Every structure is written in C-alpha cells, then in structure tokens.
Picture 1 (tube, helix red, strand yellow):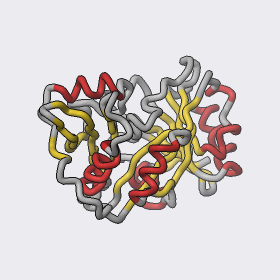
Picture 2 (spheres, helix red, strand yellow):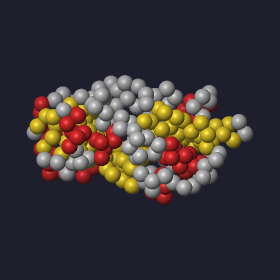
Picture 3 (cartoon, one colour):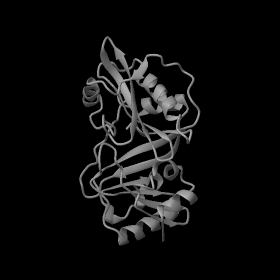
Picture 4 (cartoon, one colour):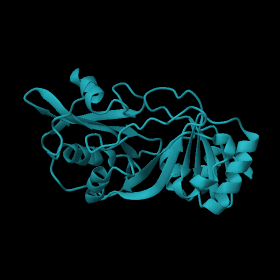
Length: 257
C-alpha cells in the first residue's frame, strides 16, 4: 500500500469515477496498490456529510488487500462505496446491515430529442413539495451545494417533474434528484427532464454527463440507456455499524439519485 496525494491520483488514475467525481479540494487522502485505489472523500450532497466516505475502486484481487490495509490503519468510515465485484472482500471492521447496489453512468453525446416544455424551475416554491412528495431521499434539494440548475415541467401552473444538474470539479455535469409528481408517472416526464438536464450537463468543459441509478430500477436504467448513457462502474454502498442504508430513490418516479 502506498499513500499518494489526491492530486497525484487524479493525474495517474485510470478510473473515470475519480477523474469526474473526486474533487481534490474536498477529498482528503488516497491510497493505491496495483491498479486499485481507495479515496477518502467528503461528499456534500444536501449539506456537509457527518464523516468521511471511502471510495474503493479497482479489480478485486488488488482491491481486497488494499482495503484490508486501509481498514487496519484508519478509523471505520461513515460510509463506503466499493466496486460491486469486490464487495465480498470488504474488511470485517466495515460490517453493516445492508448495502445499496447502483450504477454510475456516463454520456458524452447530446440526445437529439427536443424538450421545449422543460424550463428553469429553480425559483419555484413548489419545488420542495415536489421532491418531498416524489423523492424525499433525493441527493439534491434546493440550496444543495454545487447545484447549477433545476429544470422541470409545469402544467396548468403546477410543477409535475423536475431534476437538477450539479457541476463537478472538472466541469462534468451530474444529474440528480429527478422527480415526477405521484400520479403523473408513465407519461414520459422523467425522460423529457432527463434529456434536457443531459444537454445542460454536457455544456461543461469536460463534455461529460454522469448520473447514479439503482441497478434494480430497470425502467430508469432503460431510459438512460436510450439516451446514450453507459455504465462505467457498478458499486455497493453502505454505512458501517449504522443499520440499514436508506435508499434515496428506487422507482421510475424518481429515476436518479
């Protein structure tokens, strides 16, 4: 195991999750072994995290030993995210009751589908109501750090769908908190909002859009694949010794995390 700076990891890593998601101004430490990497990150989804998250990347053979060494040298993290293929090699010290299973997806080409009815809804008072009703565990809410824009669909003065783009350190736009008002599902609203958000996300200097979606949310995964997204990493995430990890969004009503 070798500890390196997060800046060096960003310069040398083959892992696209690090390249697009690990902000050197926020991530604290990094360790590598072979082609595996463990990064101590401090996510700020809807506000400051209560503790560090360890993001564990790479093939199981390299990652198993690296995680064991990090676990022996560091306190138990608040949260872990690990390549799904290496989940069974998690250190015993990170014991937990449940772990979510999700895909991190990327896209670099803008979808052509027009979305004239999707507009900026960031200033609307009913945005909070929409999220509370349709996606209460969203990783993005009005005022969340890094949110660049909220786009949505308004019908007869009522907000029926919305989602956010957060801008990452390298310019990548990440889709978050896509929500459809209960009772308005299966009308293509989530797809239209996702399409407009994707075009906005791609406007950053990296020319890349990303999102996270639960692996068993087949309708949402289908929509994203139709838009051109492809899975770059499949992860398991959990909170050691803190009971079950709540799922933030699990249905086609709220297809992104």
